[in-house]
Length: 114
Image (cartoon, rainbow, N blue to C red):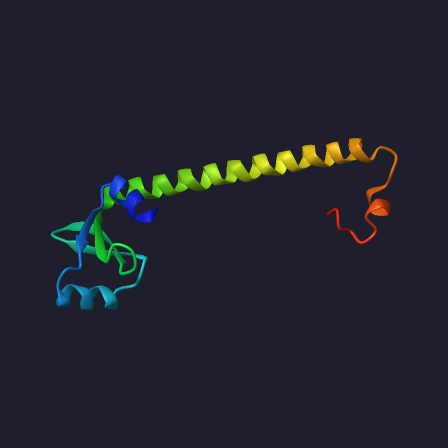
């Protein structure tokens, strides 16, 4: 869940618990980062009116940690996809063993095996 990853990275969840905060939350880009300068420091904001009904706020370090978490998730997803692709190659090899001298295109003339 994105909210949990934001909290893990060091963002704070500020609830939209007043009519004014709720109205402001609705005017912000939803589930997209915005950045503002506050007291000479860059702050990153993410409005979530759907799940937590809150505004996530973090500094540059929290944003960097969050992007590292997301990059790690993308890498692991890519590694899983690569493993599935390699397993698919093994499955094709096993298919050849299973069909032996038979051509799969003949056994499945409509291409249903693919």
